[in-house]
View 1 (cartoon, one colour):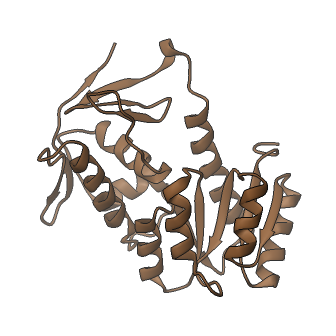
View 2: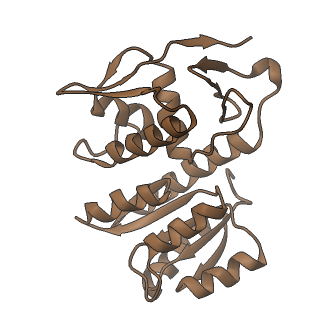
Length: 241
């Protein structure tokens, strides 16, 4: 079974939801760990790093947003945040803190499993690069992106640290340079056609990616906002042999 050996840590204070999610993942063959709060999560992390964390926003003590920021400062493992329906600000801030994806409560079992598997596939593709002859490497500005290895390096060969969601967004842009992309197109290409067309989190991801690119290449302005149009990736992109 796909991802059957992957370990998922569920950080959720609601015992009913935590047990429901744990049961769904266990039946799909995942190795599941549970934590009801930040302290229990930290204890679990000390015993070994999971492959993915499902993290609720509303937690007693240290909340999910603070936890997300703390985890992201030390690890690149995928984080799927759980938010209450209508709390768009939590989803936006969660992505700003480094979450890779979010799921709105109440959610369906199939959607949960699909999101978990999608995030694990992204992480696995980055951890197990293809052989060099199969790699798709593109250069733009002062960067090289390896689409198969899911890596970005600058002119000095230093890796640019991106979350899975940020990498997918950059891959979308470098595959369609010098072309205005609407928000709906970006959502379709990065999250699939099931994405909510009113979802504003793509704008947050673009802002976050833009800051990282600008920090590594000051003044490059690689992603421009086009009024009433969308976003434009301004760099020329070339194949690297």
